[in-house]
Length: 348
Image (cartoon, rainbow, N blue to C red; front, side, top):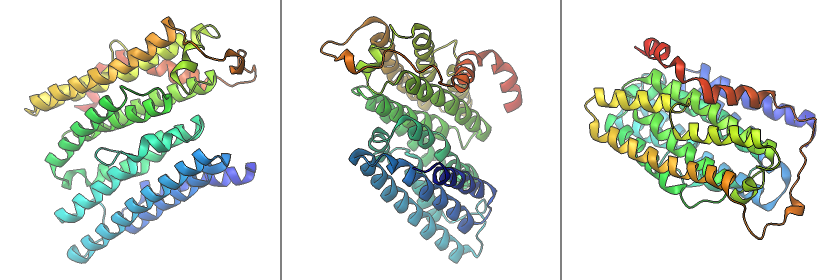
C-alpha cells in the first residue's frame, strides 16, 4: 500500500473517532463511526491474503449490522421524543437496541463471536489498532447513554463478558485469539461498573489500552504469534521476554502490578453497592483469565516445544527497531500501582 494512501486511511481513523467524540447528534456520531469503519477495512485487507480478506469481510458485515441498528434505534427515538441528542435518549426500546449495537461494535458478550476470528486474521499492528483505537468511539457513546440504560442489563453483560473471556482463552494456542478473549473479559469489567462509577470505567479503559499495547508491541518485536513461537524467544532476548511475562501477569490483574488496580477498585465499588454476589463472580472470572496468562508465562520460560523448525525462526532482531513506545508502555504497565491512593482520591 502506498504511504500516501495509508496516511489518508490513518487520518480518516482519527477524524472518524474525533467526530464521534465531538458529536451530540446521533447522525453525526453515526457518521464518525462509519468513517472509522471504512478507513480500517482497507488496512485490514492490505496483505491480500485470504485470511486477512476474510477477517476484513467479517468485520465489515458486523460493523454494518451494528451501524444499521444504531441508525434505526436513534431514528425511532427521535420519532418518539422529537430530539436527536445522544445524552437525552429516553425510550427503553431505543436505548436497549443502541446498547446492543454498540456491544456488537466493540465485541462485548453476548455479541462477541466475531472478535477472536477477525483478530486472528490480522497482523499485530492492525490488531493493535482494532483492540485499542477502534473501541474509543463506541465507548464514548456507551458512556453517554449509560445513565439511561437498564442497570441489570449492564451487569448481566459485564458478567457474561468476564466469564466468556475467561473460559474462551483457556484452550487457545494463538496469541491473537488469547488477546481477543482478554479484550472481551476486560470489557466486562468496564461495563459492570459503568452505571455506578463512570470515571472508574474510563480508568480501566486507559489501563487496558496501555497493557494491550504493551503486549502487541512486545509480540511484534519478538515476531511471535503462537505459543510455540513464544517458547522459542526466551533464548533470543531474555530481558524482553521477562518483561513480557510480567506484562501478561499485569493484564491478568496479579498484584503488585498495574493491572491489579482497576480490578481492586471495581470489586470495592461493587461491594459498596451491595452487589457482593456480582463482585465474587467477577473475582472468580479473573482467576480464569489469570490461569491462561500463567500458562503463557510457564510456556515461555520453562518449556521448549518439540517438532519445531527453528530454521524458520528469526534468531536475530533487526537493529533498527524503535523500542521507545514499548519501553514506555511496559514501564506504565508494571509500575502504576503505587499511584492508586491518588487515583482513588480523584475518583471520590
